[in-house]
Image (cartoon, rainbow, N blue to C red; front, side, top):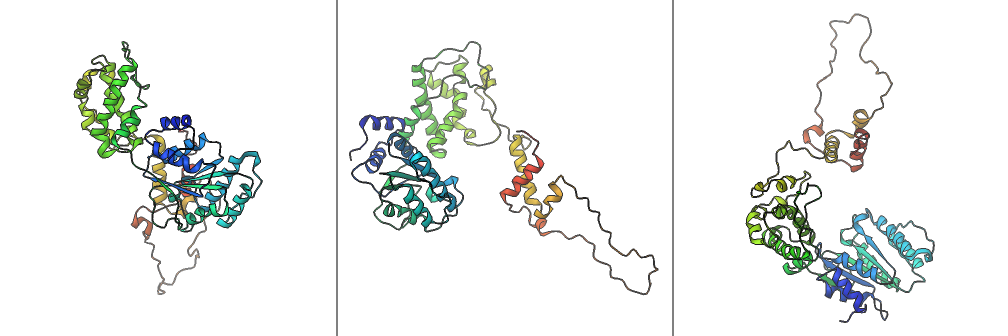
Length: 409
């Protein structure tokens, strides 16, 4: 399958996004041809496989006007349709006709799109993560897949995770699969962007910091990433973003003995023995709001590098201020009734006097007359018996604004 893009443009695209050469050629042949225009195209694959990155880079390299709609940012179907019209107008620029931005249904959306693309030769519309659209009707995807029949100069690209049978209710839609990265592909991508061989900005560098060449970094970084993948990333962190994050967490502690002058970058075997606790412990895989201990003490006192540094797991470890206040606000919203919000969280007090109840007459009571004594025992509300309850997000934000409005985080 020959690509329509020039060789220089295609090679630069393959260099910026590695290990996706076949997918780039397929997308270029289907979307950039002047001889034909496909109405629909589906890009599918698991998370972090380069689907969105590839289509974004390709659309930036060609002259065909296009618009990318991220479905995760749209709350309802109407929000998705109106955002699509806005993005198409922005892509067309000053040449776009004026339309009504409101869109109540798919039929109104089709009419607005026909007016926008009436004078256009070709337009590419991309729906990213359209299978995760909130409050999507079962007929949304089949309706969007038929846009090409009503608008011949429109090509619609759907980016989804896994195609289900009869998802679009339309046969003959070309699908391009983005498989997960293999071990060699992950190492190839990570090796193209090595981290610097220098102390982190948050630590104090030693006074006699040695100098290193690019050849030292090219020797050490691939071996380090291979060790990280085989020990930790392959069983627990097999996606590209998580693998890159894991390498960034372990790199400062791994090169601490080098920066202290105890080893050189060429002594990789000795570094592995010295830092074996980094690859035996799973502390780097834990995601926490509490910052791990800094590597400053490790650089200043290299004798402690052989001991694994376990972060404090006690319950007294403080969280940052913003998560703490959000947790407190969520607790208050789940354990109080909404009818008591104005009484508990409002700073305005009512000036109405409380009306006295009961018999205030001074006449003597008849001792023989039986009077009904009401039950004054306080009833336990059902909310307190059931524990924490669900609450709207707007209510929690209102409580947060009332309590912590004057705090700056």
